[in-house]
Image (cartoon, rainbow, N blue to C red; front, side, top):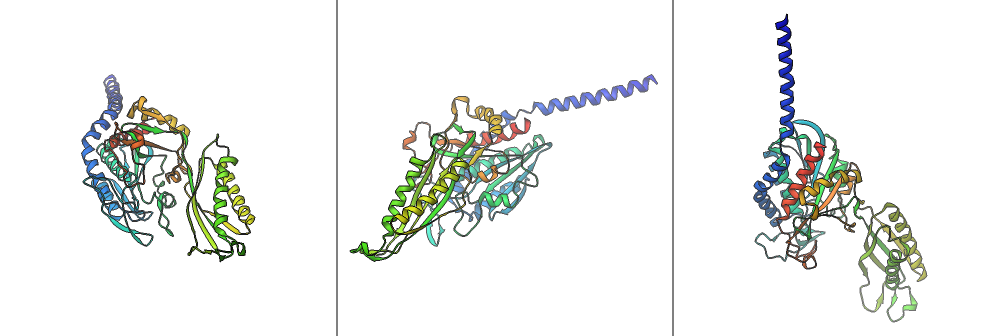
Length: 438
């Protein structure tokens, strides 16, 4: 009997020791060392992918070849792949060997109708159709680096999937720059099609490389980091007359000019700018066909940028009133239409506070910066409306360059130092694992 008790005690003791050893083994996997080493090992691959995507860019909702290359890469890694999400989107699901949360990582894939002027061996010479015209196409915003970095993170994590305490959902999104007229797509459509479901995403991380931020630096902000964006149009109706007899009609061009001026006064005189910034910009105005004819109509288009929902509501109301009554003061009629756009890119404050130490670990506390909000817009915001999200910026400018000399995004001279991708790879991988471990 004593022998049996002793044997049972021994077996139980061995089980406890075995579980203890397993637990220690689980905790001794050095994620930071692994991520740092793998970033260096994968870097040349990431550069090669980035240059391929840069040389062969594709416009929004037309990312067919890009999506095919991404999907093939994920399949080769043994990752479950979904294609044709929101037309050309690709989603990869990597289930870790241990239970834990589901983390979403997003990269946008589309390029812009811009002609490249940068002298690099892999410069784009692609032409494509945009709004019925043949146009040059360029990755003038850095989405090519976003794709390549996320492909690198997918390969890195797939190699040690048994160690991952959770599931990673890799989201390669089309049409961030906006869909062609009459089409739907982008992050909003991905959400509608259930990209954050099955398995349900707990948090999502996204980044953007910046041509005017030095390599190795990270910029972030809790709360609103990028503005809501809304397109608007204004139709102004006048009365046509001879250009020599303006009193014989109602001039919609003069009325339009005053509408533009008065719209600016909404921001400068009627908006509490100490709270958040706001922008109203008219980017298109069309009217008339001949120098000596005052036309019957004028047409305008523009963009509205806001960083606060309440301010957005107030701004919309004031714009309608200003457009209507300014036109009436000239005897004209005007109709303002404000279209749905991108919501505010809002970093969940609790998630941001939790993950800020990870960003500092990646870039160093002296190269991790809290920034003011940016009036650019991002449809990553649609993901953040559904689950807590963190969106941040990494540097892509050569370290010795003056930011004032760096070409901005969406321009022919846009240029990135590929060294910045190291920071992006490490940031996405560390955020994923650190969140799961926490």
